[in-house]
Every structure is written in C-alpha cells, then in structure tokens.
Length: 297
Image (cartoon, rainbow, N blue to C red; front, top):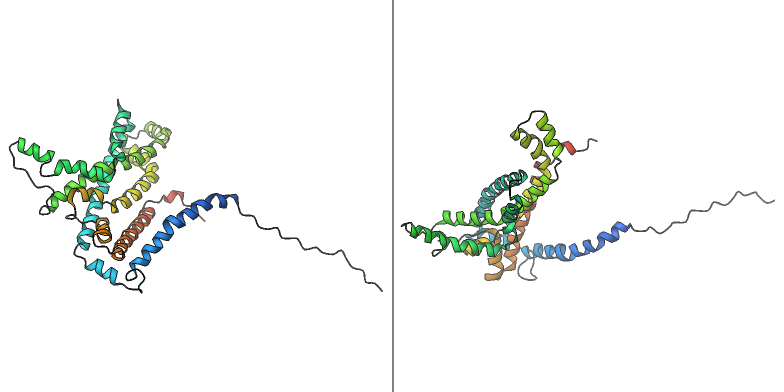
C-alpha cells in the first residue's frame, strides 16, 4: 500500500546578499581614512607608550613630558591663547557679518578684504607681524618718530607683550575663517522670519537675539569647534614671532620630534592635544545642541 504524500515543500533558495551601492561609494573613503588617519594614529599612540622603536610598554615618555620645564608653560600659554582669542574672534566676526548683512556701499569689497588673511599661510602671517613687532620693526619706527624709546616687544623678558603680539597676529590671521562660516550661515536664514518679527514690533536687538542667533546656532557650533581645534594647533605664528621663548603645545611637539629627536615624547604631546581637542568638541556639541530638534520617543 502506497501512502499518499502531499506536495513536496521546497525550501526557498537563499540569494546571495548584495552589498548596497552606498557601501561601494563610501568604501574608497573608508580605505583612505584607514591609510591616512587610522594607521598613523595607531602608530602615534603606540609610540607614546613604548620605549624607543620597538621597546616594551612604558610610561617614561609621559613622565618626561610632564617633567619637561616647558610643558606647563606651554599648557598655560595655549589655554590663555584660546580663552582670549576665541571670544574676540567671534565678537569681531559677528560685528563684521552684521555689517555685511546691512549691505552698505562696497560691502562685497569689504568681505574680500576681510577674507584675505584666509589665503595667507600661518608662517607668512607670522612674518608679516614680525616686521611690525621686531626691534627694528614698523611699530618701533613710529615710536622713535614720536620721540619715544623703542621697546623690545618680542623679548623673552617681556612675556606680556609676546602674548599680545601672538594674540594680535592670530586675531588677524584666523578671524576671517569664523567670518566666512558666520556669513554663510546668515545667508541661509530666510528673511521672512526677521520681517515677521519686525511686523510684530520687535526692535533690531530683539530680532538679533531671538531670531537670528538661534537660527545661526548650527553655523556657530561648526565655527566654534573648528576654530578651537585649530587654536590648539597654533604654532607657526608664535614660532615666527617669538621662537621658543613663547612655548605652545604644538611647538613643544615639534621641538621634541625635530630638535631633540625623540618621537616618543613628541607622540605623547600630540596625544594630549588630540585628547583635549576631542573633549572640547564633545563639550561644544552637548552645550550648543538644539533641544527643539530632539525627537521625543
């Protein structure tokens, strides 16, 4: 007797999973990032924790960095520079952007004039300001013409004027970067909001603080993160103006790598700069995030 059997159940054949086209599009950038960023970072992190080229694990590099007489002055100068420069640059950039937004006569010319320092390299900017603050520079020439005694602005015996010179040079060189970001952010704000607020009786300052500034927050966030990270990397301007008498963290990294031929301690310095930059960026992102755009779950 033959048992009746039902139709055979055929298991669905599994099709080979195809990778998304988006994966293939981003694959070159992933490979590039791994080669140019991840691998050098791995080598740098490893160098900070080993002795010599292939030695074992050690914290001696970090001890040498912390005990270096130039380490804490470099930390102090870098932090002071950031604390003073960043607020001033944002203040000047906002004033210039608001002037451009008002569109006075020749506003396009003003924008290009203010953006010129963006095309000047750090070292060239330092040399420009060196011609002003050096002992035979333009500033001392003016003092002599006025019957005053020249002053050693960049001498190691006058750290206050060294700081002033580096601050002015950095303000001139890097404010244009913040200006460009702020101006592009302002151009993305619809005029309807400002006009509607004016119709409801808001004055200029009320429209600025309650309409323009909140809508400008994403651009300010980008400019703040970018400028702070770049400020941690200030080196060439200070090097051109003061040499090694005004130590900064990046300058010390360069000194340990080139003059002292110790890439291990230089890597420790670089890791400090990277860690502080990343922590600062996270703090900015959390402090300036737009709560109104958070999706309620």
